[in-house]
Length: 490
Ligand SMILES: Nc1nc2c(ncn2[C@@H]2O[C@H](COP(=O)(O)OP(=O)(O)OP(=O)(O)O)[C@@H](O)[C@H]2O)c(=O)[nH]1
Ligand SMILES: [Mg+2]
Image (cartoon, rainbow, N blue to C red; front, side, top):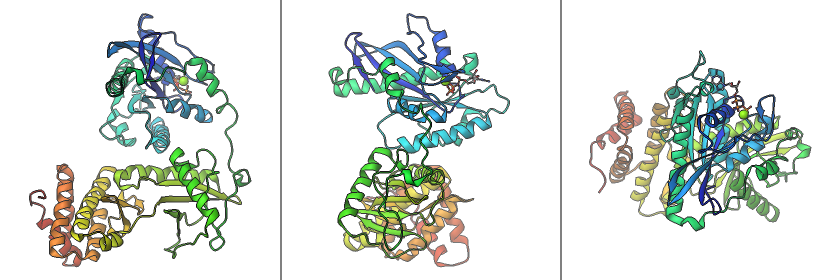
């Protein structure tokens, strides 16, 4: 939260040092306390700790910078990294303007960081906060420490998230990390003050004492165990398929994304109580339903433990995040139990298929142009995240002016190649006329154009297909390549 404290006449922002246990979060804040004089900082507050482990948080404020004539005060807080205290972690992360993710750079540490960061991402991908992220590659002194650029790759950070190398124990990189994070926080505060004015900022209400009181009941006891399905709210079981239908009584943490996902489940639950729920014709081992404007799909085989289902849910959530704009906005995942068996439900808006969109949305050529853009986006995602998308129009649904993807995401050796081949096979089935083909191909190349490296990589794959023995696929590849040098759409 960006606050304004009228008594101090200061703007307050919060930086939360997050990351797995033992990564060095407390060490960072302690080093900062040692590095600044008391003119620039407050006391380092540590409400309680056990054997050097943070139980609530460490709290330090640093003063510096001026925004719209008011001083800027940065509250630096660490989270407790122990998984037993995860609920406290999430509460603190939710209050962050900037998240400083501290990562132990050893290979074991990076594995742990990856897991922790994926859970963070799955929970917060659509949240308003934290608004900026900085990653610290700590413990660079360790013999098997990974370089920051490798860590960026392992955590799949993209270009927007800076990674700062550090040896927090020696004070190296600690200030640098804080400076990058404070700059980001100052930008956020400045933007808010410029757009809303200082009076629109909330008053601070979340000091160290209040925060301890809020955190106390969270996670101090044992983590709730959901292995026993009898402790879960009961689900309505669909008579014909025997599947427990999604409902809003799912325990905390078993629905993604947390808040909006639960609202979706609520809407589905209400609809299930008033209407008969029909399964759609079966496709393979999946059961499909349409309820209240949503399309629902249950995992084929149930999981025998809640933990297994939860792990799968977070993995799927991660792939949804990677799909970016190709992922329907209302996508929800939920683990639903019945008699100690657990199903993962994937829920999305019920959208017209590509075929339906072609039939209803005139003119057809415009729909094919949108398809070209969506295919370009599929290729970009496959290339950037090394994942295979089945870029077949049959797996695209019309949403707004464009398309979203509701196929599976797979891993594979040559993800761009596999995605490009699936695109060619799908296009063969669409059978565009020559005018439609030209417009589609132009839209595809135009959408790829801003990324030269990707355009070249797509060229290589299409040329490979075009030069293979003469088939429908090689012809389709040649036809697409013919348009590649055409100037942008008029
Ligand atoms: N070798 C090495 N050890 C470090 C470094 N930074 C921190 N440590 C050590 O790592 C251990 C954990 O550090 P903490 O700062 O307590 O870790 P934390 O992230 O706050 O851990 P939790 O409070 O349990 O979440 C301590 O023994 C630190 O001395 C570093 O740069 N290099
Ligand atoms: Mg700590």
